[in-house]
Length: 171
Image 1 (cartoon, rainbow, N blue to C red):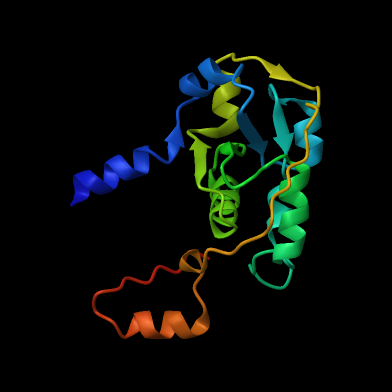
Image 2: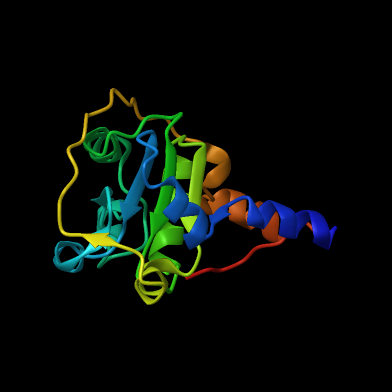
């Protein structure tokens, strides 16, 4: 039902007010998906720069997701493990945040949320920002793939011919 879907969608987002109240939570990992130059100018306190471009195997060629061994390296460097609580934000369009969200889901990170409205809204609320890079304790994350979050050419062709499936082209 529509109500259930809306409640589920709510559970995937975190309001700026909620994040502001949780900034002292040392277990929470905050990822800023903006370019490093933007991150360096200012970011949410304790946020780690995790540019969206690192989620692409080759962004110029296609939207294919980064290879597991590379994502393992990036997730370890960010201190992320499968049970980490992660909040992701971008400038406010939510496209880059959604891409990183999906990538983390593909690679088995289960407790992921997107910051509602993004960084520009955070600034408009006059919440504090930082130019400091937080110290990060690397994780021992081992890459695993949640194949239910990936669509191959074959599974897409099967879904197109199945009246119980909906295919959304999100390019």
